[in-house]
Amino acid sequence: MLRRFRPYLRYLRSNRATLTAAIFYGLLFGATNGLGLPLLIKYVFPVIFDRTGPHAMPMADVVLIAATVPMLFLLRAVSSFLNSYYTQLTGVRILEGVRLDFFRKLQVLPLSFLQRESSGDLLSRGIADSSQLQSTLTLIANDGVKQPMALLGALGFLVWQAFTTDGALTVLVCLAIVPLAVLPVHYVGKKVVHRARQVQDQLGDVSSQLNENLSAAREVRAFGLEARETERFGQATNLLIIAQMKVVKYAQALTPAIELISAVGIAATLIFAYYAGVKLETFLSIITALYLCYEPIKKLGYLNSELNRGVASLSRLEYVLDEPVTITDPAAPVSVTRLRGDIAFHDVTFAYGDSPALKQVSARIPAGTVCALVGPSGAGKSTFANLVPRFYEVAAGGVTIDGIDVRAMRLADLRRNIALVSQEPVLFNDTIFNNLLLGDVTASREAVLAAARNAHAHEFIEQLPQGYDTMVGERGALLSGGQKQRIAIARAFLRAAPILILDEATSALDSESEAAVQDALRHLVVGKTVLIIAHRFSTIRDASMILVFDQGKIVASGDHAALHAGNALYKALYDRQTAGK
Ligand code: ADP
Image (cartoon, rainbow, N blue to C red; front, side):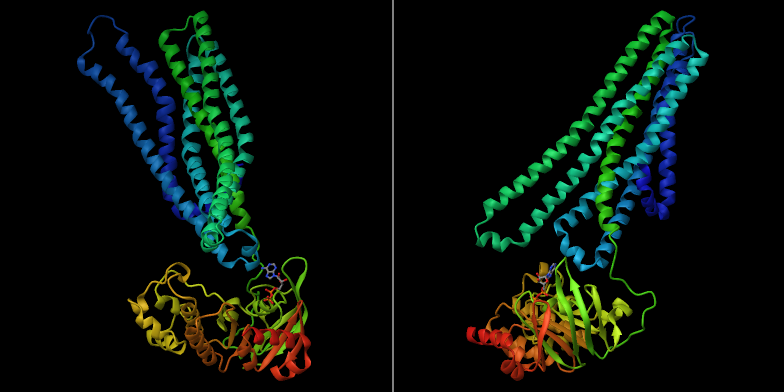
């Protein structure tokens, strides 16, 4: 089982000194703990009680002998402290490594993976499972060294006594009981592993419900779902508690079981001691050593069940860490700087799951064209647009820009040539200025301000209390929809990429915002190849090219006049929209 953890020891590579210190003090602790006390009882204390006459020993000697006890415990205390300190340090460093790797992986995983998994559960894997792994690894580093050492020390003492003292038989009998104490450890370990996995899965469930609820706060209030949501959450936490208590049951039964077995061991030793005529100090030192044997077994037993929990968490983390990154840079990328933006789809087929979302789609959008994608919802417009920045990988066919397959370019090169304005732009909880800067992190302050002016965002930003330094709140919650859109447009201005993908907002903005957004967009599209997932007839009419989608296929293309005259689906869509206005 320990082998499962081996790959993670790489996180320790840069912290070898810390780990070495931890192990050294662990060994020291083990020796003082397992061997020290029995030695004192057997060889040091008897000097005090072995009186030939009253007060024959000088006072200084008596004090010196007595002082061996605190000295031993001082050594034990210091080594225990340093061992724990350094192992904790090792543990947090491992945790940091695992969390960073996990996060790094989330940055590159295909979008399809992130859409398939619940984000709350991923959150729980990143936080709860990695901290479970940390506590397991610290415990391994800690007790994994200390306890076997203590056990060896105590066992060593017992074996030594067996050969040097009368009543060796007694000792051997006592020893025979030690392996018995390992039985419950083995049993509990087997029980815990699969239950620990349940706990972590359930924790993921609780976390995903919490996450979902928080992101639907408005809907919950609007539809009066408060009680239903609370009940659902209550059910999830209840299942979590049940799973947790199962682990508690097994893990906590372990210590009493081992203690009971050790009590039987002591009783057996007493009986044999009586018949073998063992002296009291021999008996006491043996009992102490015996006790010191059980103590590490108890701790190792706990370690074993903790190890099983660690394995459960590890497999949940590895589920993400080992997920193949399917969309990667090619081995020999075509060097690309600035593309012109001549986009072509060649017989592209793509499916999210089983049924294809695009079926053998071919199209050519010459550089500098403003192309509107229209069609009923679910027809494949977004999918079409998402294949250009290679957010997904085509199943068959290919997408080229300027004649170069997107799979032949470095992802960073490809995406640097594309600006994206989504329907509901997401802002980071940072200042407006920094949010704008995301368009091009190397841009100067003047360039950022110019982009904001072009996007008609400058005016409203200036009116905010802290201007460009205003914090926008989580996901930009403190700004209106129209304001967020203008910030997204300003980002796209700043990016100055030759290709622009625009997912037009379906929700209506107030007319003033609407006019500002439309005007900003009109300026933004100039000189670029633009794909607009269009919902407004004004946008569609202005486009120089229109692709009509239906059920994963392009069923018609042309300009507005031609399509309105010649395509029934387009005419129906268009007339319905204009009628709704
Ligand atoms: P449109 O943009 O025209 O409304 P989409 O391109 O979003 O259509 O969707 C095309 C088809 O693919 C639809 O049947 C939709 O249900 C499906 N689809 C879209 N996104 C996903 C996804 N992330 N996972 C699975 N299926 C999806």
